[in-house]
Length: 313
Image (cartoon, rainbow, N blue to C red; front, side, top):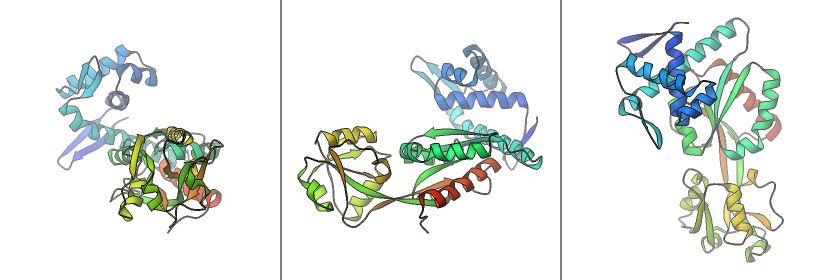
C-alpha cells in the first residue's frame, strides 16, 4: 500500500508499506523504551528491530536513537520526527478503517488512554460487550495518570482517553459521570463517628496525598477553600494509600468509585459541601478520529447512560 501524507503544505511524502513497517517498529521502540521489549511485542528478533532502526536512520540521513546501558532515548532529531511518524501511522490506520467501512467491514485498532479506577471498575464490562458486538476491532489500553493520558491524546499515541474534566483546551470532550470525593479514615480515628467531615478538620490531620498527576481533584478542593493539607505521605497507588489509612497513619480523600472493596477497619465519610470529580472521554479532534474509535466512543457514552446513570451537562 502507498499512503500520501503531507507534513506541511509544501512537501508531499510518498510512504510505502516498507516504510510503514519501519515507522511502526521505531514508534514501538520509543513507546516501550527498549529494543528487546519492542521485539517481543512485535514478534521480531532484536536483530530485526536494530536493522529496521538502522535502515530508517540511513534512509533519513539522521541519527534517531541513542543506545546505552541504561536503555534508549531519542536524539533531538528523533524528538522532532516522532510526532510526524505517529501521525503517518494514525492516518494510515484511519485510511484502512475507512476502506473497511466502505466495504461494510468493521475492523481496526483503537488505543485508549485510561487510569486505574476506570480500568478496574468499568472497562472490563465495556470491552467485553463492545468486542462481542465488534470482534474485528482490536482494543489497546494505555494506563497512566491524568497528565500522561492528555499527553497521549495530544501526541496521537492514544485515539482518545478517559480524562478528568476540565481537560486540555481544544480537545473534543464527552462528559460521562460525576464521582463523589470521599474522606477515607481508619475505624480507630476519632472523626469516624461523624456523619460528614469538614475540610477544616481534614486540614488538621496527617494527610496521605496522591502524587502529582493523580492529585488534581484534591488540590482543586483545597485550593477552592483556601486550605493547605498537612501532607504526611505522598503515594501513587490507591491501594497503598488505603493501606496507610488502615494503619491509622493519616487520612485521605479518594473518589468513591475506587472504594467499593475496603478492609473492615477502613471507613468512608462524605465531605461537607459535596465534592466530585468529573469524568469524560476526550480526543484531539472528533473530526479526525478513526471510524473504529468513533464507534467505541459512541458505545461508551451509551453504556454510561444505561449502566452508570447521570451524565452531567
